[in-house]
Length: 145
Image 1 (cartoon, rainbow, N blue to C red):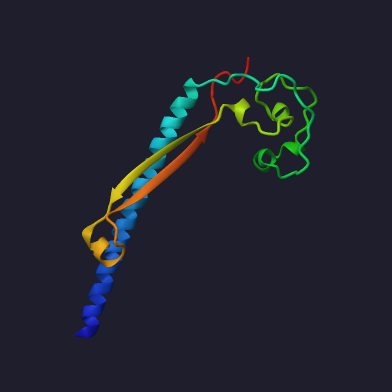
Image 2: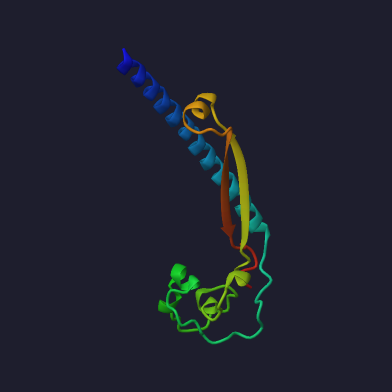
């Protein structure tokens, strides 16, 4: 009888945990979708202001895994002609920090998800879980002339 009681408590704990974590996961996915949709719509209406610096400096990044290179591998890109686009791989390679030229903006969304009473009693002694999603998009208009 004792084993059956322990098994029921464990089974209730597992069911409460799985259902609550599933609900939190779905809420996180919806929050991510909302954040991406809002950031994408804002990026379509936002434009860049052109170059922040008037003169284009020579390439001066010594580390091949600089934060720009870590994503785009700009050191392997060597076009025959200089690009006339204000935000291309070639022109961004001459910048130390290219975030201003791309018009990057970060959208942050937060949502508080209430937890079930059984989950609070058995597993996590808090009433809510705070979900947070952060999305960064570049400006989508005014990138070329």
